[in-house]
Length: 325
Figure 1 (spheres, rainbow, N blue to C red):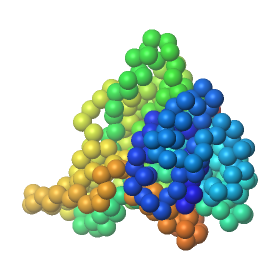
Figure 2 (cartoon, rainbow, N blue to C red):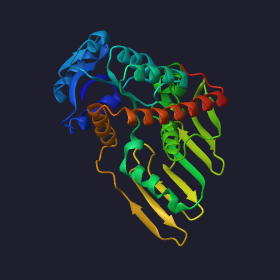
Figure 3 (cartoon, rainbow, N blue to C red):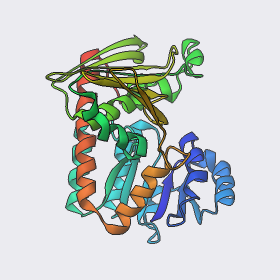
């Protein structure tokens, strides 16, 4: 994979040291805004990136780049992914894929019509511990209740209360607790159960953005509660309860660091099978293989998953009376 990276923010700064441990991914280009170009050149030198660009069209014209990684603010995902697809590039897009399901449907049609890879960078779907949870679900008997809580007091919330609206709390930029934290819970649940029959989002809304909220997903025989909060905090964990046992996920649903399976008799078995320390490693190893093998069957499978997630997001936003973008 010969990669063009869009952005120089926190996620890119976290991504770069990790991706250097995957030799088959070549860092060809880095796109920066003019005001962040000094940071971009620092990153270029530190991580041996071939070229820094401040013009997106010029990056897209670089024939050495076969795949674009969209790591920009949420509201820019659709626009920049579409431009990359139109330029004939494969696209890896950070979560949330888009702000609304309609945008994702358009990107999907465009990618498949051009036989290009389009895939969402969502860590939990590729982690070994998540695959183990999926494998062990039948051990729990008939599933009844799932609760996911990813609550993390945001350092930007104090600024938000003081009147400074940063991207994390800006509805026009697709901010808020649903899109930042609860989105991981949605992916976690949808990857296990598929599409719910009913969605309701009970949000704490301040100045038109959800600072925290409880998302209720109904399935025919299973009830799910997903909690995401940026205005308060709590021990972060998730539980899956069935008639024959339960699973307790230790930590957030984006890292799936370890879990404990508990039988009715109290017997507890701990699992910690992720092979890499960094949460993004497994997904980018998978993406490199998908691009190298042009594995469009997996692309279509993962797009179907992402479409289900975006349908849940659309229903949640509507039920809470929010408007993003």
